[in-house]
Image 1 (cartoon, rainbow, N blue to C red):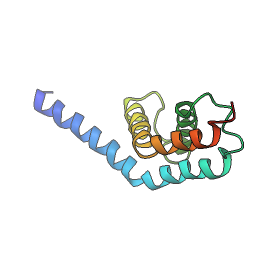
Image 2 (cartoon, rainbow, N blue to C red):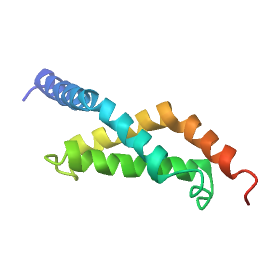
Image 3 (cartoon, rainbow, N blue to C red):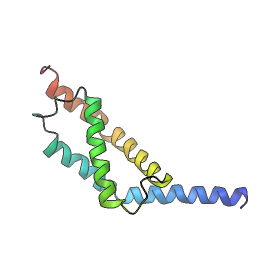
Image 4 (tube, one colour):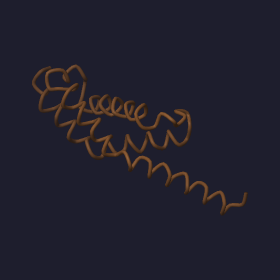
Length: 112
C-alpha cells in the first residue's frame, strides 16, 4: 500500500467515525440532559468534590449509555471507539462544561 492509499484509508476512517457520531449527537444531548434532570439533582450533587468531578461523572454515565445503545457493535478496545469516545468527551465538555460547573457551584457553594 502506498502513502496515498494509506492517507485515504485514514481519512475515510476518521470521516466514518465522525458521521456515526453526528447522527446520534441529539441522543448524547438527551443522555446528558436526562441525567441532570433526574439523577444528578441539586439535592444529591454536593457529594462530589467539585463541578469538574460532576462533569466527569455525568459525561461518563452518558457515554456509557451511548456505547450500549448505539455503539455496541464497536470493539471497545478499537481505535474507532477510542476516537469516538474522545469526540464525545470533547463535545460534552464544550457544550455542557460551564453549565454543569455553574449548576454545581450554585447548588453546593454554601453547603460545605
